Length: 163
Ligand code: RP5
Image 1 (cartoon, rainbow, N blue to C red):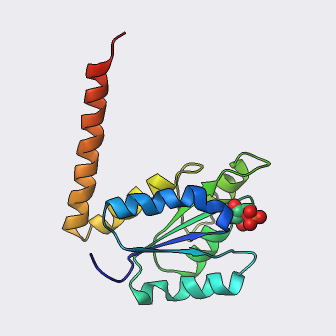
Image 2: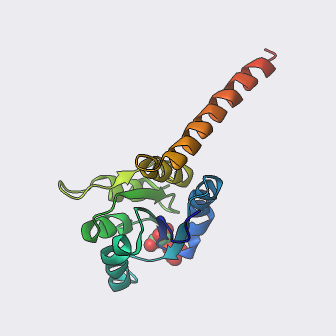
């Protein structure tokens, strides 16, 4: 494993950690170095911009950003960073995460973020691994192994069906 983190996992609040840790867990499974930070588009806008402007100079290759409600974190990071940004809409208390999803997915032309499903932090981690795997055969092999395991699990479930 490289010592320097390749993926930055950001979240708007520590209240997002319960979901966002799933991105960290799958990256650990793929043995991909990553860092985890709380950064808010609204509460720490300067720190968010600073992180986005400098992450690529420190060896980060992909950023995952989770936020809930008026979820502008991924968009703000994408505005300042040349890196691919994966957005995770966090399920909110009032609107079940639809507000988060729409805040993230409806980016203006020219500033994309790749938005996964509501609370889809695990998929965000897998997508980050797939992006890294394009230029790293070892990581790509781990993704292929993961997919083979998915298939094996479904085949086993079919064998166990009794109905
Ligand atoms: C967003 O507001 C965070 O991403 C979080 O999902 C939501 C609520 O934050 P807290 O009030 O729990 O800190 O910025």
